[in-house]
Length: 279
Image 1 (tube, one colour):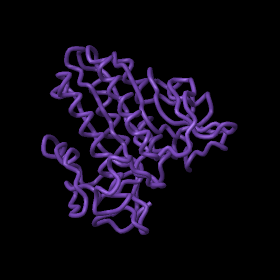
Image 2 (cartoon, rainbow, N blue to C red):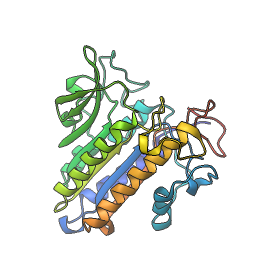
Image 3 (spheres, rainbow, N blue to C red):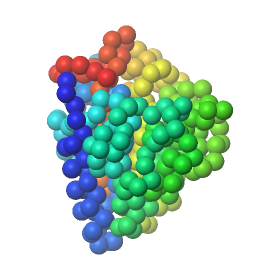
C-alpha cells in the first residue's frame, strides 16, 4: 500500500491555524492520542470481530470516523509530519531515528506546540517522542512545556524522563507496567491546565513489539498478547475521556485518535483490515 502524509500535514496545519487564531474563550482543548504500529482492522469501529475497543468506538459514535488517512510507513517520519505540518522528507527525515543517530528534529522547524503556544495554549507530551534522542532534541526544546516519556541514552539505555531529567531506567518502552505512569502524567497535565486551553500529545508506545501487556489485561482478549495490549490502549483512551468528563472539559475538547503506520503482520500481530500490507 502506498502511504503518504501530505493529507495529514495539510489538514493538521489548517486545524492548528484555525484554533490558534480564535478568541481565548472559544479555544478548544486538543488531545491527540497516537498509537504505535496499530492496524486499521484492530478496532471494533473499523470492523474487528476479534477485538473489543468500546472506548475508542465511542469516539466514533460521538464524533467523526475517517476511513482514508495517509501517513508515512515508519514512525519517525510520521511523527515529524505531525509535529511540523510538512512531508517528512521535506523536513529531512527519511528514516527511523535511533539513539545512535546524531540527528533529530531541526531547530528551525516550527512545531505544532510552538504554533499553538502563539495562540495561548499550554503544551504537553506523554510517551514516545522518537524525533531525536539527544538533549538538543528533547521535546521541551521544541515547544512543549511538559514532557513525561521515553528517550534513550547511549550510556544508560532507555529511560523515562520528566522534562530534561531522567527519572527512571527501563528495559522496554512497551512494557505495560509503564501504562499507569503515562496515564497518571497525562491526567495530571489535564487537571493542572483545565482553566486554560491545552494541547496534549499522548504518544503511546503500544502496540509496538515486544507485546508485554499490563498484568490487569493479560489473557483478556481473543488475540493473545497483541489483543491484550490493544485492550490496554482502549482502557487508556477511556480513562482520558473520563477525566475530561469529570473536569467539565469534554464538550470543549477535540480528541483525535490515530495510528502512526500500519501493523506488524503475522506471528500474532496486527490486522490491516481491507488494506493490502503492513509496516
